[in-house]
Amino acid sequence: MGATNIDNFTEKQNAIATLIKALAHPARVAIVEYLMKVDTCICGDIVNELPLAQPTVSQHLKELKNAGIIKGSIEGNAICYCIDEKALNKLRSYFANITNKLEMKKINCC
Amino acid sequence: MGATNIDNFTEKQNAIATLIKALAHPARVAIVEYLMKVDTCICGDIVNELPLAQPTVSQHLKELKNAGIIKGSIEGNAICYCIDEKALNKLRSYFANITNKLEMKKINCC
DNA sequence: TATCTTTATCGTAATATTGCAATATAGTAA
DNA sequence: TTACTATATTGCAATATTACGATAAAGATA
Image 1: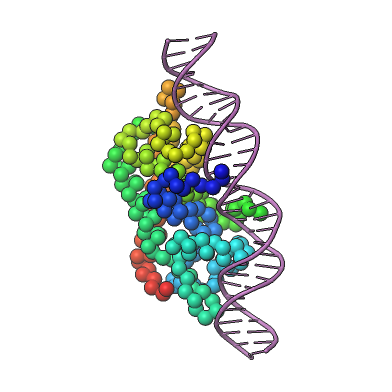
Image 2: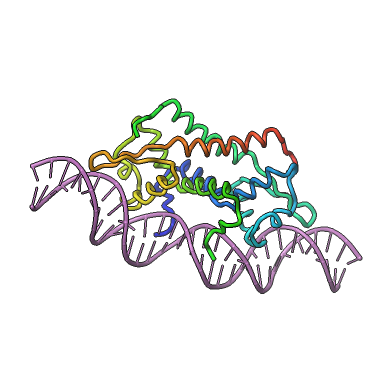
């Protein structure tokens, strides 16, 4: 025990949970918000912006990249990271769909 | 170490990360989707719907309740759980806001 | 009352996550 | 070449999460 039970949920449920999990940490939220704030995708400065050591930031960047939330391109000896819209659009759609359905249902039992 | 560094991020970043984290598990995604599927808020059946033992489901329900994603009301000796729209609307707004900004920026550097 | 049903909590084992120092890798620049 | 800069990886300790059996708590029912 301790490992998340994955086999008994649907592919979709596992996929969306994995995507959501990638943003379930304030450091990764902060990284995405920083990439939003700067006008162009920025090379390197992310470590300086966060209150974490360089290896820790690198680890969080890796998780965001694995989840498809950001993408990085090599730019000399630095790496330019920026947001990948596709993953964030998936999250937007997922929550928009839920709240739309809730609007239509107008459940008022609790 | 191992504990998430919370002191050095903003209140907003910590709050949204905590809310997101509540749905960062397929079981909790499945619970919310089940509550969406049934027409009225349902008492008890959640345990039968999930491939997990009763204490485990109870634990996940507690986390969803703590995060404000669901609310439960006592109904005899059973408990009636249903979705709290406010928390899900926050998530909808958060991701809608991000994707809207991305649309406007049209970043195409990577 | 005693029993049943439903949900919560406790205790614990297995696994995952977080964070960082140390080090490695890869490119740039002298 | 050597040194410098930027990022990644390794290894490890601290903490958190997940899962479940056993048990408790609280209301329903006989």
